[in-house]
Image 1 (cartoon, rainbow, N blue to C red):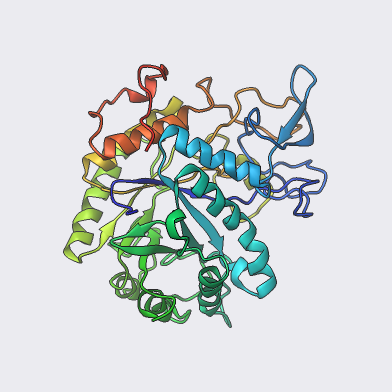
Image 2: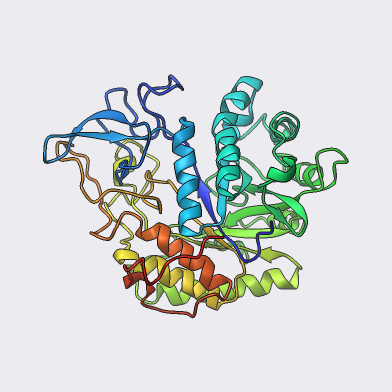
Length: 409
């Protein structure tokens, strides 16, 4: 498998429920054990899940509002089944720095990755590991634990050596590993002293665990080293050692700002030219909308906590962004994100019927479009990317799945 010509989604897999096998109670749905203060802005459509968990909330008809747990294999199986059903190529499995710190956390953190590996083989979807440096401290830590983690994934999980069942994503003939979080000024660590060159060298050249392609997740304005990007030119030195660049665009462009999508198109075109000059590949980042109203109420470090701060417009914003990225000749798309209800970027099935007794918490619906609308649009994005369908600015308005059926790959 190669990334070129594919649409891949970021996959958090971090939702836990009270009563699930993890024993961790509510995680990422709320920051309190009683579920009094939800931290998600969307509510999942759980009508197809094998296992669900009761919350304190009710729907208007009096029935209990339930949620899923990512810790259940059946949940991950269903998510990858949806990817296959709608023609989505696969997922980058988020692996946060905290998970890599010690053997116990690495072991526990492998549960969802193991679920995804099995699910990818059942569904014929691709997976790849994305190391997110969020959690790396300002001093006394470097990326050596990431190296240890990758060794364990290769040795114990056999992540890249599944024989005829191999579903790990390769790029230019090599397993693709992602490192996300370089060059953001709000991070406590200094990119010069976290061992990044050693990590990239290990992934690319180690005789036993290397031979990988490396993708780096960087800020939007990486070229200028300005705005949302550190001014340190060392970032460009690190990027030169990679194979693929993926700039994080979430929150940088909005459906509420006139001309913003034209600005996005110019940004992608400029990025592609910059990367081509340096013989780097490029993955354009697209997202359906943004909202972290409930999450922001529980934290002091998050700004712009308005509900629906970047409206989806029933898929118009998402499809326009996809169309612009492909028109600019991006050959790879990164969708942020598959299951991110915390920040309102989820593309998987979310509900239009919402709990009613939620107190101060507020939730968003899918504006009346079907719960699979964004899954379907993501599948159409892959077809457009590969030239299987013609550009259609009004694709987001289409709802007839019979006449516009996604071709399964």
